Image 1: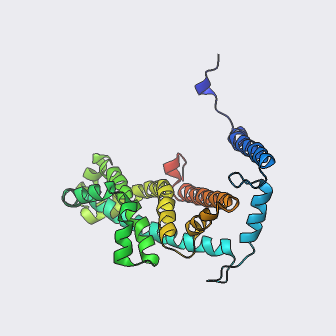
Image 2: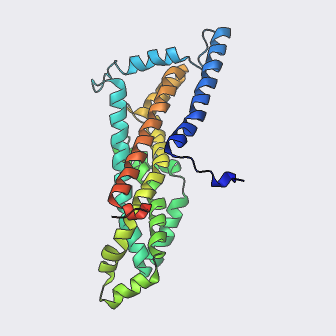
Image 3: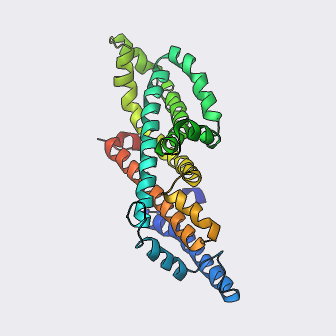
Length: 272
């Protein structure tokens, strides 16, 4: 008798199985929205697919007055700029600190407690402080993403480096490696796949911090647009924007996974 845990669907079957709940949710939404609009044609809570299609046509053809770009393009570029720069700062900082704290016990004893304290502070709680110190422009939004993501990535990378086999460190030191060489030639090559994985896991929180910052102080961006139209209960705009953000996040995650598999196949069970 075949056990359930032993059933391993092939790629085509996995794609089909993964599509089933998505299609089911869309069908449930379709039935629910049609039922609500049959009872109340002015209902805004569950817009029909045709209403959302009209809204999509509107924000994909209308132009933003400030930038003279198509609304969805202007919002997407502004949000991706903030998200990309914030994640780049966080990733660079986490890489340096993770190597330093992982390789040098003295640095770990000195800086580890500070990073642990910063990691437990809710980033959104410091948003007003960032607005006061850095102003309402791009710097505060980018800083929120970096502050929100960097401590967790740093702790993850530090734990990975300290968990490397002690034999590797001992052999490198026997061959004359100093602390700098241990970090760059022993720890760093093994750390890179973990860095990409940590970045993938940080995409979700980074989007949350971005949307929170844009909702409070922005004049363009995906989060700004969602919170702008919520006062009009414009679910026909909000739902497509949420779907678009989800697609962007999925695409970013897929690209990072592809880059990791191409650059470091050994970390994914493949050979060179």
